[in-house]
Amino acid sequence: MRITNYFVPTRKEVPREAEIPSHQMMLRAGLIRQHVAGAYSILPMGWRILKNIMNIVREEMDAIGCHEFYLPAISPGDLWQKSGRWKTFGDDMFKFKDRKGREMCLAPTHEEVFTEIAANDIRSYRDLPKMWYQIQTKFRDEVRPRSGLLRVRQFFMKDAYSFDATMEGLDKSYSLQRGAYLRIFGRAGLDVKVVKASSGAMGGRDCEEFMLLSESGDDEIVNCSSCSYASNQEVADSKIEKVSGEPGELTKVSTPGMRTIDEVSAFLKIKSSLLVKSLLYKKDDGSLVFVLVRGDHQVDDGKLEAVLGDCMPADAEDVKKLTGADIGYISPVGLKDVTVIADPSLEGMQGLVAGANENEFHVTGVDMARDINVERFTPLRTVEAGEACINCGAPLEVSRAIEVGHIFKLGTRYTEALDALFLDENGENKPIIMGSYGIGVERIMAGAIETHFDGTVMKWPKEIAPFSVQIMPLNVSSDTCREAAEKLYDTLKDKKVEVLLDDRDERAGVKFKDADLFGIPVVVVVGDRSLKEGVIEVRNRADESTEMVKVEDVADYVLKLL
RNA sequence: CGGGGUGUAGCGCAGCCCGGUCAGCGCGCCUGCUUUGGGAGCAGGAUGUCGGAGGUUCAAAUCCUCUCACCCCGACCA
Image (cartoon, rainbow, N blue to C red; front, side):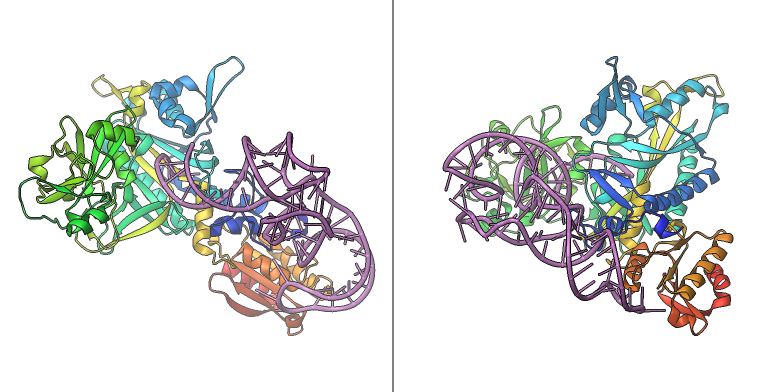
């Protein structure tokens, strides 16, 4: 490819809207352009990268016997009504009516559609197992698109689905997919961690996420510094030393103006870990739930949602109506008919301090078992770095990460809803057991940049690099320089090497700077200075090593590097 | 949706507080000459409804009201 004939609009300056490295780099290197929030054009060089990623995905899917489909992006509303997701996806789905007034949507994922195919054409256990996938555009009207290609409203997803007759079959399909995922991310140059996660809107039981550690990610993962424990914060747990106070009677104490944990603990001169943090949440159905964690802990929204479903902090009015007091003085102590869930760190504790449900007062001597009727103890607190691993006790690490893949053991949630049944060996009708497996294609590209770009220089992993070799004649006005470059270009092209020739009439500096952005693994610098010595400079991007190679040997030398 | 920020030439920005030679700078772009190993030099040139709509005023990029878009922080997810 000749740059003069190509379209790679590079920028010297960082566009105002881009904050994270991958977003800045993609705009500067001319890989993408934005149109509205969360929708980007992929320019030719960016498209080459994405296609490379898709090719890896296809090879690895095909290799495990997973077969490629292509499903429509538009989908009828009633299909989603049947699965219940018309409501649960809600405004995250782009919905519209066709000319006849029928409810339609742009599919945000394809469980329903693939399941419908299975429902219609899979009859017998003899038809199972099956694994199907597609690489297709997904549409999600994200509340807040952001971070370049990391969170967008239209993106490529590789979504795969497995259909099995038995749970053992599902386990097998799942582990085939899991293995393929690890190979895909490895080939794309991403060092991912596999973590336990919450299945959220997808439903089903077990699921794991493939996480790329990066400050630009908006997930938080917890992993053990010693054993293999790794989990998304939203389902993470840790071993915590229990703290109990002196057992005693419930005693009302005056705490004028002391609303926060810090204020109360300072005023009463007790450790904040002996306070009960009582928060009132309102669920989607309007019911109120007390959520309790230790005073020195934070409630984790992800965990809360995994337990309660969609919920919000109750407003001041609800709080007052239920407890008779204002926020800062409430707790479930002495209240009847309230639902309470609590973090395990509070289980069995005594001598605690909680709100008295009367303004300006707290109670001391609280005994969890005696004074509070807890419906369920379940991890609700945010795990902090340094806490002890739940498995081995070693210190935990907490890091930001980008979710690049997510795999689910769905079970029969969709197949039951959509009547995807099969006849087993005994002639019995049973729902097919399903798994679903997603990869964000653009996120692999963005993720690769996040890990292989230092703000100036990009180093694409070989398998996804837009080109294998870049040839850089430093001065195209010089016949010797231009001709040497052209000759090498033709030779490499004949050998089917993907090569980019920077044949622009630009100064060397401009070309070097752009080459740093392009990040092509091998850069051949052709200049009169070295040609005089009969050599050409070959740079290996991976380690920034350079070699002066005799003109007649350059082509072979480059081929060996690939 | 709540909180914060930004909209002025293709890109990056100054000007706004304190209305009036404020339509400006750098880069890029076009023409010519020179230059050619890390974002060249000289000379000349083109480009703006100052995000939009109302209003205040003799006068608005500048003050007021409304609105739109984009970005960042939170709830959602590949």
